[in-house]
Image 1 (cartoon, helix red, strand yellow):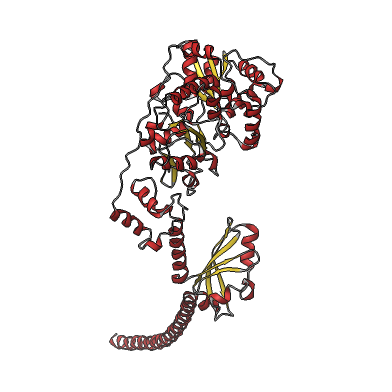
Image 2 (cartoon, rainbow, N blue to C red):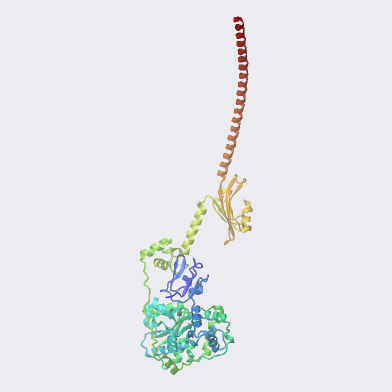
Length: 582
């Protein structure tokens, strides 16, 4: 089956509002995001209505219908009777004209099909063979019973809905090649149109938002259109179907004999569930029950935007006042019904979800810190009514462990406290007034202020807040800045100061680097001493070298003088001996 409700994953995360508002828990959380379970979903549309981020969207058939008309096909629209309260007009014939201007070959009221269904209900009441009769006009209610209360299918009136009945009638009238489009406020009709039990009678489903957009695109104002009467069987009282008690009133106006069934109506998901629980336990018998999933009837369908809608009470009063309590023309109806089987058999469609053992439930609960019954808060924040229901959903892979808000809060708080208590660095958070809103206990070692004292102080009461103020003003962060506090025993810190936009606060971590700073200072002094010592050694060596050089110079000079004298003496002695020999 094609998707009917789609999700925008980027917008859907850690919310669970749709789960909380889904009365049948047909939404699975996977990778922190919601996904609809098609075989569990009854398409009540509550998730569409409550989603705060508009992360869920309805898949529209509008483009497909426009293409059908553009392609020149014969397209017939069946318009639900709720149009009387949802489309602005002075006469219903103006709606007929406006839709024909869009290109529809014919415009017909779904209430024609409602008249057929009313006739079928009348026969069942007259026969009196069913213990209870549950109306089957609402596809969401039908899904609720088939999926979650299959034991009650024996009470479901075995007849198609007005939409399908009308589709059958139009198919007979216009042939197989015609395209039949349903227009109404219900999204469950999309799924019903694709039901294999009556596939091929409805080709597309539009809602009133679709049609208003289309009319606006074409510049068509219903109020300005001429009044073109509908050419059809006048459904009369059957136009009341979209308001509460409308089906019962239609049956009462149509039946010729008084039956023995007690008649009442139920609307709203929770009320429907309560009713079926009561019927399941055998508390109700001999009743004809009009059931509608939408509180207030079809006129309050899931695609109806509140700001565009008049009060459902006014609508109901206006409809009941203006609609004649007369049955549709019997002869014309019989002719339209001829040769068509409007019967529908409802079946067990309950999903076979695996069920965990008690030990497995306890194990799952234990993994989120719920080891004792008193730990099970049953707060419902995750979307499930009890912690046990949530544990079962986890086992069935419909939910995730971290959906438990109290557990995740405690876990985050304990981790945050662990960081604050064990980190050797001071963690500071201040607001725009420099009021301290977080201060880890290690701060007492830094500034002599206990956490309790600091939480009642302003930052400027013990240190200069200039850098913090700069971060607030510029929204720029400071990383790795060295700041000294001589007044606090020459404390030296390395500071990271960042702006937290979401909370409009500044967070700072101060790392004590006093020891490293002192060591660096000591190392620098040692280097200076070493350099001085080296300079002194060099100087001394130079002095010694000069002294040695001086001594060597004197010795060399004496030696030169002595040797010169010796040489001269030897020369003189040699000259005398030579003369005597001659």
